[in-house]
Image 1 (cartoon, helix red, strand yellow):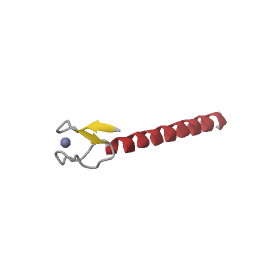
Image 2 (cartoon, rainbow, N blue to C red):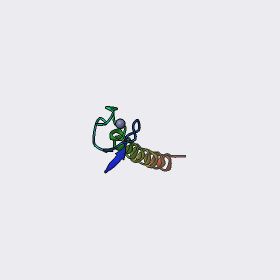
Image 3 (cartoon, rainbow, N blue to C red):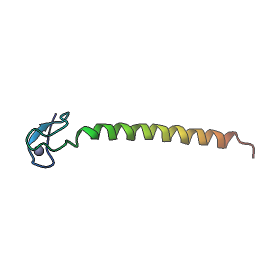
Image 4 (cartoon, protein in one colour):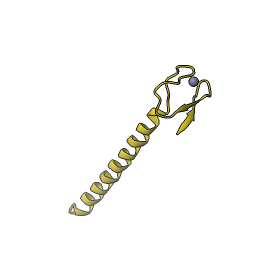
Length: 61
Ligand SMILES: [Zn+2]
């Protein structure tokens, strides 16, 4: 999937580490990592919330 370079605006491949036109490092590579990290964080957050809820319900009052 081609994307536009942030520096020179030329069309480059998304998985390219560096822009072949101006040599600038591509910022689109890290996008996938950030999305993956965010998804992992959401899953951990849901698990933590459920664990807290279960503990709160099981605790004697
Ligand atoms: Zn460029």
